[in-house]
Image (cartoon, rainbow, N blue to C red; front, side):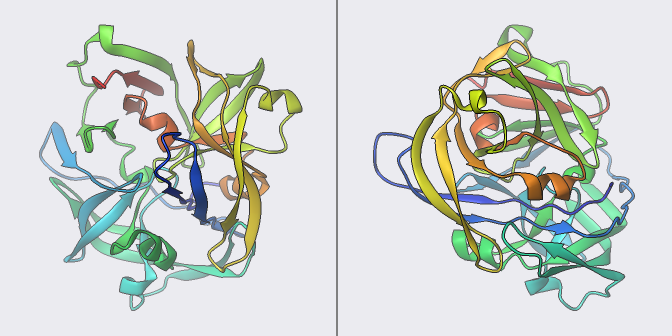
Length: 320
């Protein structure tokens, strides 16, 4: 189901406690998924560069890129949980609608997504011409973070590059070819990366159970499916129960935990902040079954390199 729209944001309000898992609440989860199959062709990037450094603006634990849509400049969320370019209806409501279809959120199925066409989308040294994008309401994201957001930059904008994300340094680097400048002694992790329906996927293991996780730079915590076997949750430390809300305001109760040991490749990650909730909606959105999602809690562990062409994820030490 290529082109499936799925937008996920998790916002955390932290207290002043020294305990990194002492969280006042999870304010918002936005989940959108279409009822129909609307394929979207990958756009072709243009620009004369081999290596491009892109500064990121951090707001909470989401990261923004300054970009321009048909001459309008503003902030876009770096969101590998979205399949492609998504525009905020607050600022692009007058764009021509190519088609419209029903979508849903975590708690309801009453939203609509509109497909449109953008003449030119650009950031730093790269630009795209005549690409399709979706338009939807992103007001809750703006309201929670207090910053103007024009849209989301999803996976298919980056698939032609080697993608290097260093959240600690607030920097994204795009390469046209595989970089050779990394020192292998700084390598923390190397594992296979696959793309299905414009969803980034890696394999992992928890307590002997092999699992499939998606990747999402737009989420501030990880997610694990509450429907998994009970042994998956052995070793997890419950921080609290909390409430999440969908775009239309309905709520659902979830658990916020510190995850036990998760093995990715040959490396074990411990203590990642994680929500436990039913991922039936997310799996429907992706058009494939997933067991969880890795967000900021994973990406902040090091400098992450995604080699889409060769199907590899590498993590290097970022000196912290």
